[in-house]
Amino acid sequence: MGLLVDGRWSERWHDTASTDGRFVRSESAFRQWVSGTREPGRGGSLGFIAEPGQYHLYVSPACPWAHRVLIMRALKGLETSISLSVVHWLMLDHGWTFETGPGVVPDPIIGARYLYNIYAHADPGFTGRVTVPVLWDRRQDTIVSNESSEIIRMLNSSFDGVGAARGDYYPFELRGEIDEVNSDVYEALNNGVHRAGFATTRASYEEAVLPLFDTLDWLEDRLAGQRYLVGERLTEADIRLFTTLVRFDSIYHGHFKCSMRRLVYFPSLWAYTRDLLQTPGFGSTFISNTRSAITTRATAPSIRPALYRWDPSSTLRFHITALPSPLTRNSAA
Image (cartoon, rainbow, N blue to C red; front, side):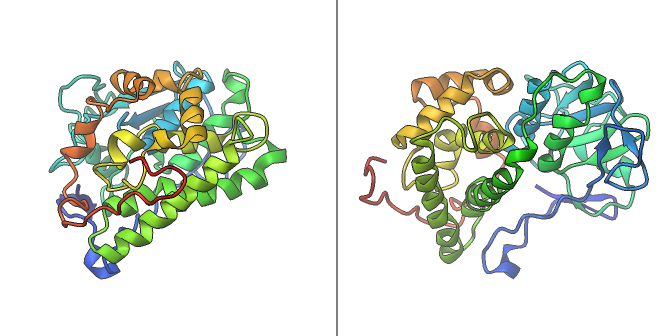
């Protein structure tokens, strides 16, 4: 996994030596905003306006950050309004590519071979990581955003006046609680699995993995008495949590050394994940073989290669032994 430096591709992993072994995620570089009106958007002076057919998404179904955008796109009925390119699941020397493979949908904008071509087209001097999802404006020929948490909010409301399906997954009266839950879940769990998996020292690994399981315990207790994370309705907080949980046993438990307990031994979280998987927009946007794996408690052969083969820097490589299962809640591992 490399990055662009002044618009040129460089194969370079995250510099964990300078962070005491910690994986530190880079901030998203493109943070413009699509507005539902013809007034200037909150992203700045470019004024991206919601119009059917104007925007294009670049995603990887293997990526949890991109998956949350696919779910929101489906929930809001925007499949025909916002077109889609899907990168190859295997990310190696050139990062995400459009090499021919199952499920790959080529780039219709510039015929890019690599996703970094899209970034360089938007900004020829760009320096930074090349990630999915990417929201592209066909009319202005540039990237609007590569920040998934903001893209899902644009899809949630900005297209309501131009054909989006009904439904508000960030309702005003619940925003304070949603933001609070999102913050806790992001730091310890959404990003926590990567902080554990990409840690290069024992101390940084434990610093990530112990709060991760504390958070799973907290979520287990929270969901023991309610169907959804916030209130009595589906919200973006559920979408953001789901895309990590649905990959937990297949990927994060083993490959990322989050192996103190499997998700199946959290009864409420397991039931919650399976419930969401059967909710329209959730299971349909997930890899089909993985869906059957979730419902049968088996491992998921189709999604494992997407992370097991590309990752050049995991706790496996640095010989960090996973913490054993503690004798709490349920000692099964």
